[in-house]
Image (cartoon, rainbow, N blue to C red; front, side):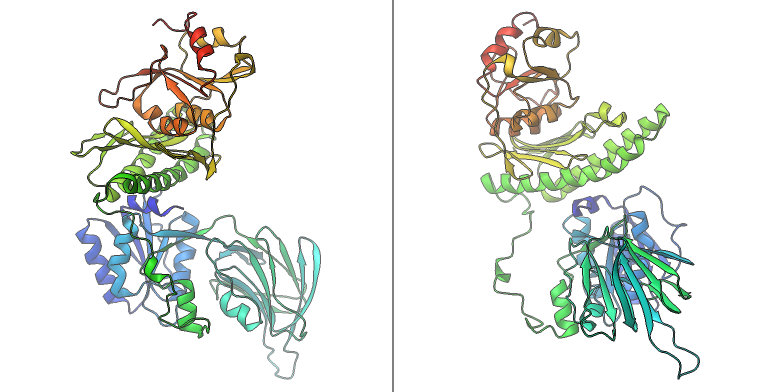
Length: 568
């Protein structure tokens, strides 16, 4: 999950531990001041009565790590991001102190926080079917008679490959988030949990000196067979059972990740372990030699001009396009299974609305003096020269039919000239990006158009072709004519060399604003049907013909267009 998506939050659900009244009062005042809905639930209680599905929601826990783990158990299955406020003592997970609660929330709701997607694990056994973010432990059950055996034997298989017999106090399977204490106790590594997907098998007080923790992929299926009675706990007791001899436990990485909100007011991971574990590599207050060179916040309230502003706008455009792509991808998965036309229309409308809200809210936060012109949301005027031109869902027809050829298009226009263009394809995770006069990239790989000059060697893309004249005039002449159903994608694929030319019978400004920047930066030539330079105009919002090519192919295209494709 991208942090920019938090900018649309309109509801906070707080899971609160006892003795946290002061922090809760601060949260209540803050949400009242911003007219945000707040629901408060005691730790351990269900939130079903206060949670509304598909409403932009932020989860907050107020307590220690135990409360935070309860929050994960509550929020992660619903895909709700979680921010932890620490009112406990020894806390590795909830890292925002109560005195900084308001500042941390302000940063999150302005879309400037980071959301870590943390690997979870899933465990199933007799009486247990649970998900955890820390670990699952299997330990020996103490005998009633103190002279009886006090160790356990556990047989472990990884994807049906026999790992071996673990004899001792037991073992744990931990995620990167839950690796710290248990791994250290077994002379294993501490895992940096950010963007780390793995599982670690950790022996507990093993009787074999050579046995060490083993790290494996989260897709690994661990099968553990008990050699006697064993106590199974998930995340310190969030799920628990007593197993008998020769029972099986299955552990693997969970399909759903937990989304944890991190702000600049958190203690960072290595700061936390330095303070709490006596990490010797750095002191508690040592931020490192480059701390003074930390980047400034993205928003400077429009104070900067020129290249710096354009580059900051490009970064923002990439972030908001990817953030908007998340709910589109989620809703696209739902629309594929729906057969009722009206229900599909409702989902497409919701997709347009959610994507547009994410983009426009983040832009308004970062560049409040800029105008916004969106297909979905209309126009917000501005006094300055900059206007954002947005199509939150280009390829609506494709989206409605479960077709993956749809995109998010975000452009910044200076006066009447597009200077920043970003197009994001949610289903394939392709991110096209460029600034005017700069380099076009796809996922940071430079793009360049082809150099073909012969129609019979060229692949063409067609947009709306009302009477089929473009197809009929070019189909026999070219290597192929394809129609994707998205003008933004057509221009990006021209830029990447996947096609040699693009024809659009008519285009709206939001269809092509971002794609124009990307295609031109990659070397494309863009004209109208008469070969005159294509002029971008969002003031009137009128439709315009567009012919784009790699450049060398343009004369041949214009010649065939004169044969009757358009009436000029």
